Image 1: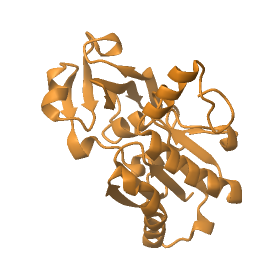
Image 2 (image 1 turned 90 degrees about the vertical axis):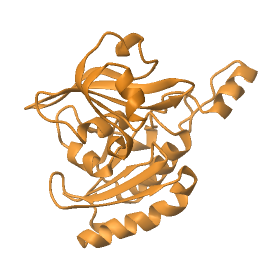
Image 3 (image 1 turned 180 degrees about the vertical axis):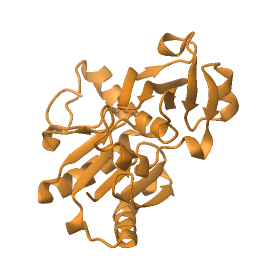
Length: 237
């Protein structure tokens, strides 16, 4: 099965194509403002590298956040457009899982984190087993030293924040930070079909990414109007 995978939840766009746990190609690009313009070209490049066309892609996979509001919408909109034309199987996985699973091994407990600004992080905990992936705690906004990130020790902490900062939290025996802590679309491909990994979306037209928290403009609008702003499906965000 040839999967086309997109991760645009951070300022690094990652695009990959290939078979789960098989031959794959990946391209990355930094700069959140460049995601929309660069995405089609990167898709063409990864497909060309593995020798297939977009018509030969058999499934789509998208990281669904939490993360950059704009980046998530860029990837989601592009993938939905392809789905509307091709009706391909449509898989999603938390960006935090994509970060963590990149370095996962059986028997390891790990936490994936990403910056949520305001001195907070997006965080989720996972346990890797011989049979798949178990969620220890679901993606949420957290402050180091509080909630799920308090009095907890795991094998591995993965994120793209500074290594010294992540190590100071005392959460893990080992820290993977910086570029190695970024989500990678090849890992997203490998999560397709894994129990507890990527999930198959029954109705992609109704699916929206998990942004984690409202964009600043949305938060201001809701504060001014006293009600939730609807998302693109017409439901309150």
